[in-house]
Picture 1 (tube, one colour):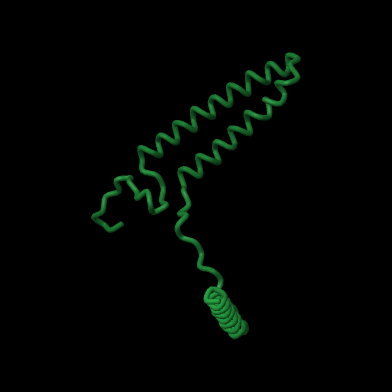
Picture 2 (cartoon, helix red, strand yellow):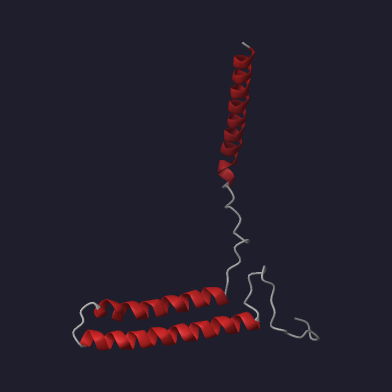
Length: 124
């Protein structure tokens, strides 16, 4: 940003940058509510499990895992990766350039011979 630019908090959705402030706050609030629900559900299930309900032990471990997953997804939403920019394919090593050119020439010759044999078969 230049010296006269003002940060409005809005970023381009296409650029893969962080979310604008209203969308980021919505994600933060959703995460906070989700984590609060996971904590309450964990507390409820641990009480039931300690009270003798064997099935509740599965939920005792499930709710914290769900909370961890929600933090991971929140991070992915807040910091999206730009899917359009991929690394360029690796370049071929100089010692193999001749082999690549020969292979491409061979492929072109095969295509031409296949087209010729198709044309000969159609005209018979």
